[in-house]
Length: 422
Image 1 (cartoon, rainbow, N blue to C red):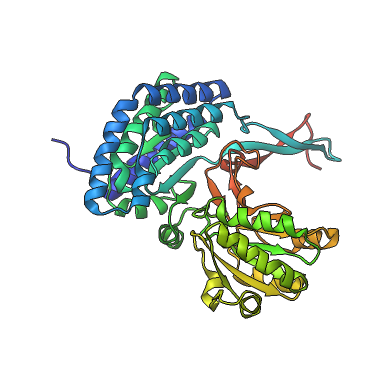
Image 2 (tube, rainbow, N blue to C red):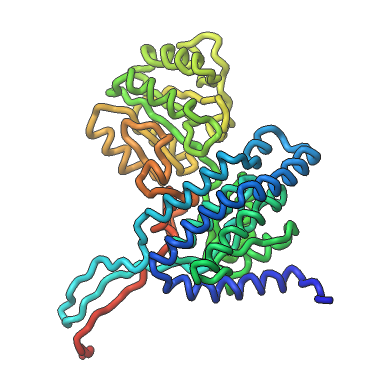
């Protein structure tokens, strides 16, 4: 009888296997990686009933554990959702492969050529909650970018994640690539999360996907670099030179097109010069769309009976049909408010003033800054990345939506013709 591995031994085994697989994946050609993704898509569709049966075990356990309706909805896998996962793998297979790209080649006075080559990061650890589709999406992006991945999903989705990961591993085997390029942490022991984020001998980067408490824990415990964002406190600023109809449309879309996402607007700032005309109309439009507006003292004067905002509102990510509204004196005040309260995710200015728009783009220090557009566009697909593994509000090594290129890095390359240094 084989002795049960300790948490440390389990992590060491996963890490060693991932490190070995990453060395092979680094050299894998695009055709082999794409064949793997297409094969995995076919297997997901073929094994749809088995995946749904596994998901039913998670759904039953979730109901018994008292998971709320929103969590159960994120957890559930239907035939249509599995087909959508498969389509996602097919789409990633169609994306351009960034690995091996050579750029910025220049001749130096010595005669050598110096440039960059894009290479995989290595071993990526993904820690996520509830959504089993992340198992397929995250693994596919890691594989296409030539990496190996260790997946640690939430305990509430363990059966679903096992079934999906099995399809990915089988596809790797069928394509003559190492199965251990995709490994699922097959234990619900929370101690393994701590081991994974400290496994700097084996893991090159950690990407958490989940609630703020999960990400905060990982950021505080990790010895491995983390690609993350904590909050999405996004702003729209309506300038004195704004087209007010455009501003109203953008604000309603940024808040209400989908409220529970990180790129939804949480705070609306309005220049005092247009506030008297714009604020009542804007509050009426937001209210008609189902939003609750919490206003500063100046905006409450313009809309009697509006709920007053508190200091805490300016620092709150609602993820709900709630928006805070503040009247500001000018562009400087808007930029200052954003600097004080933003989570550095996404901000937008609505203005026809070229100088004001350019100042906003230059001076606002967030991962995405927009001019005359809804914050809801801060998304990998909308940016032309094809897909994303998450959003980063860090400054290193990638910022904003993280696609295939964000899962790679660059190394210097030198091409010589026998030159020696004198």
